[in-house]
Image (cartoon, rainbow, N blue to C red; front, side, top):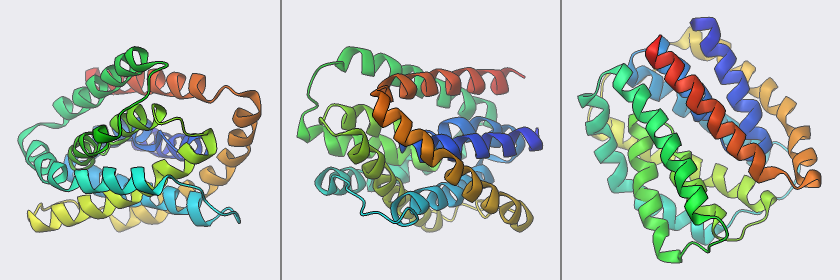
Length: 241
């Protein structure tokens, strides 16, 4: 399972490099299967921050995030992160893994219902609150942000840059919430971090060419849907097994 968790981290980093989304949805189910919930949250928050920083400052280009959307989402995440800590403390690991899968199913349904519709601007803080709660409970904060941002008529490049900005802001909010609530056990093992940090960096580099291919083929949304389905299968499998 530890090896599988490493594979999940590598796959998640490559996919997030390609799409701006998906690191925790792939890595979280396996990480929660191997580690205690609080440590899994701490590890994925750290590694996810690495992926997002590499996307924004490690590609020798000028990022183009939607700053207004990002700030509204991060602002709404503050109270949600505190609520998420309560969920983290109350639920056992298997229940948390199942919660990840439920969130993915909800995302797929919401995307289907919202297809072709414009997401109203006032929904940003709501998406942020949900993302904040997921940040400190399961680390899978992407789905509510993805549903919101896909309805804001952003280009794939804008979406790929906006998601990392939001994720970084959520990581800071989540870390502060964990410290403020004195949540013990969230500091990951140093040896595990030393092994996985270079794995994430190499996987991020491997995922960069895929984004260019997706942008040219105009198949970005199909890949995002496939990513959600894969994460659903992985989450349910690790929870059951």
